View 1 (tube, rainbow, N blue to C red):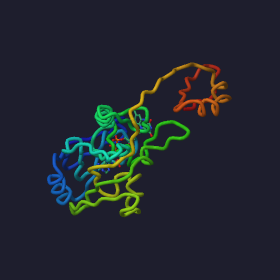
View 2 (cartoon, rainbow, N blue to C red):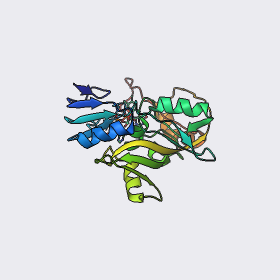
View 3 (tube, protein in one colour):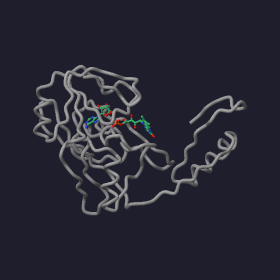
Length: 220
Ligand SMILES: Cc1cc2nc3c(=O)[nH]c(=O)nc-3n(C[C@H](O)[C@H](O)[C@H](O)COP(=O)(O)OP(=O)(O)OC[C@H]3O[C@@H](n4cnc5c(N)ncnc54)[C@H](O)[C@@H]3O)c2cc1C
């Protein structure tokens, strides 16, 4: 069966594509496989998920969210899309601290590649990660955090899928908030001149540059 990433720039023919529903099923798949890669939404442009072995998707793995006492952190299924996660968090009166441009990415895929949004004082999704529940090649479960196996924790925060299969991730959240979006058009020179001011005044700011005959360079 052929697999392609979102853009079609990476393709592979895995021997087996599996969507385990339980950790027991997942453990059997991992233990039996010669080679394992895990895929989230396949949005990465680099060949991170390509394999001729077993390709795993955790999108159907059972599980739900679990908050800490003051609802500042939540354990969530690593295979959930950010769209699903933010919808469930919203129902509970909480929001992620930051996100990128789109939300189909799996929580584990976004964290594993350091997916970031904008915001001068806001970190990437990896910086909000507080703990991981990881399945090792023999099917054993290991947990890690800043205080428990700290080296593994730091590696898992930007793992590129190399330190085990994440089944659950603990992440910081905020009380639910709305953002107001303003879209305005300026000459590139004005954006460059006002960039520091715009970044200081707004929680988020980004720009897209559309080339015209008088524009000699393109930036994002
Ligand atoms: C339209 C579009 C817009 C984008 N916008 C932004 C943006 O605004 N900001 C930004 O920073 N990036 C952006 N990206 C990049 C995207 O966020 C990253 O490539 C991200 O990794 C995609 O998540 P994914 O779930 O598709 O991961 P995948 O590409 O499926 O996987 C990424 C990595 O995570 C690993 N992985 C996935 N699941 C698990 C798991 N359960 N356990 C262990 N490892 C796992 C994979 O093995 C792989 O190494 C964008 C991409 C696209 C296509």
